[in-house]
Length: 335
Length: 232
Image 1 (cartoon, each protein chain N blue to C red):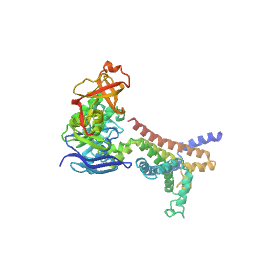
Image 2: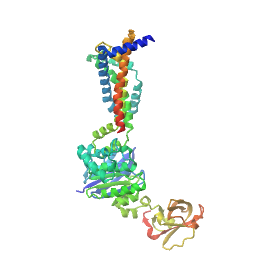
Image 3: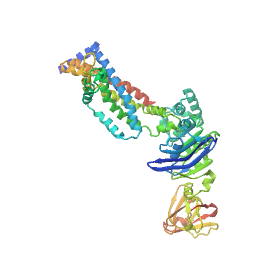
Image 4: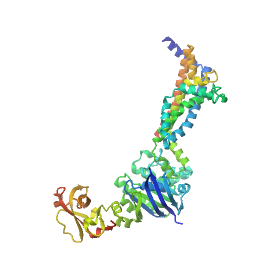
């Protein structure tokens, strides 16, 4: 029997509409699965369904390979929902409350709470009111509270949402250490591929409530299964055969697309003609948006470090430009 | 003006001298109003929770009815409870009319809608993800509900205070279903009405002052608890 969490033919409907349809999924102990998807793709719904919290649910949630009951999920699983819901009272009380809610004694709950507050760097906040904390501190409290119950399955919904860059980096590092526990199966819901790359060995891509691709994170992030998956993992340039004259649709990341005002001369590159839309300085990097295609309906973009070269900088929107994509950075996807 | 001054002086003398009649009426008032408020909380909080947390047909109707209950005339409640408990009425066989229990029932009917409406508001103000998050940590439904009540304990306390306030000061229902029988169903409000009608203004003022002190005292205790909690 495989230890961990999964599902079979899991379907969730809301208002008569199917918002999640996952035929099969398995996350074994000692591994972390990142579920990557845009807003509204069904990520949180999947997480809640696995925790048996979704109302209109069909199919089976599997715990250790067998159908999960509410009682078994209660003892094995802990989930941290997207907004960190903290209770009235101190941080210590909050972190201990998971165990107290499971019926454990105060002494055991507070001992476990102290250990996890220490490990997640919030011990100095123990006596503070949890509601007075910043977003990042609240996230840590919510995570410590979930970990204090020693779950075998940890479900995390966007744990880094709304955190500033420094707080996020520190938190990712601390979480990384926690997720290395060989007995812990983790599902991490996120819309950020960097978080998936940092924390998860496997990644699943969720588009419109359906899993389009599941596999090792490095493979999923570098070899998307289709155009939707490609856009989701950052291959913003989707080039159809009509545009390129190639037999298959190819995709490329903006950081590997070079926009230039001059006629293209790059060898070993696919070159597409287009018209300049705008040049957007993003602080340290600059994004160049271009339209291409017969009707000008294909949006392309390129990223350059620093400022764009002078000839392109002088161009007005609507000017003819070329976008070149080095062949080694192109990926084939089904049309 | 003299009547008023003399009234206050005499009222003060009655209170200080520990007039037995006044304290007996006060004790009964407390018993009846606290029992009615407790009954209203026992009925009103679960009903308010049902309205706040579940979607069912007629939910808005219940909430609108509860809100209407804020303005429910005690006389109307008194009338219906009297008719129900009347010797030939549907519940006449219980023989409850003109007993303290009948007053508790009538006052609970007055206070319950107030508690329902305020409890529903109190629970709706808690994060909608509160219970799912508690259950996601391993709480049973019962424990997550208890945690929710704990989370909303301050506004729930306010709902209880409002319920008590609604009954301790009402006179219409108390006089109709209790009958204002001396030593049995006479409470501060009904006694004050009677004393006023008889022209015993000093006694009426004394009773009124006790009523005010009583309402203030109970609310003071609850407010202290509430404020101490809110600082935590």
